[in-house]
Image (tube, rainbow, N blue to C red):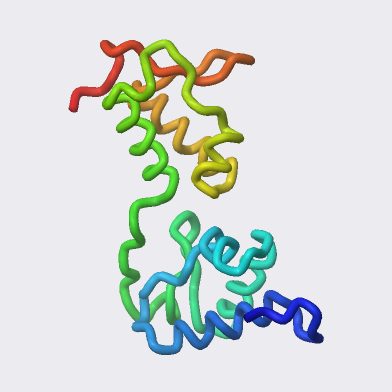
Amino acid sequence: MLDYEGDTHVYLQIADILRRRVSGLSAGHPVPSEAEIQQEFGVARTTARRAVRVLREEGLVYTVQGEGAFVGPSTEAPRQRRKTPLYQQIATDISNQIQSGKLLPRRPIPGETALVKQHGVARETVRRAMALLREQGWIYTVAQRGSYVSPRESWPES
C-alpha cells in the first residue's frame, strides 16, 4: 500500500516494492512495463519511469529501447521474450473484429481516443497499432475524417 501523505516519494515506494519482487527472479526476466506499473499503482507514467530508473541506477535492472526493463546486468543472461507488444495485440484485436464482421468495410473504426480508453494504453501505442493495420491493408485513413475498414479485396490473405 502506497503512502501518499508520508515523507517518502511515491516513486521510491514503488521502487521498493519492485526491488522486493525482482530479488527472486533470474537475470533476463522481464520487469513490469511502465504501463503495467501505472495501472497497478494508479500513478502517472513519469512516476512509473522514475521507479524503474531507481532500480536501473542500482544495477538491479537494465532497459532495452522498445522492449522494456529486465532483471540483472545486461551482460549476465539473455533476456526472455516479453509477451506480444501491446500495439500488436490491439492491431490483432481490430483485425479480428474486421474478419468477424463486427467492423464493416468502408465504415469507421473506433478513434484514437476511444482505443486509448478501451485498452488503457498511451496514444502512441494506438498510433503504432493503426500504422500496422494500414501497412497490412486492414484499414485506410482519410485526412480530417478518421480511419476506415478497407474493402475486402484489400485485406491480407489469411
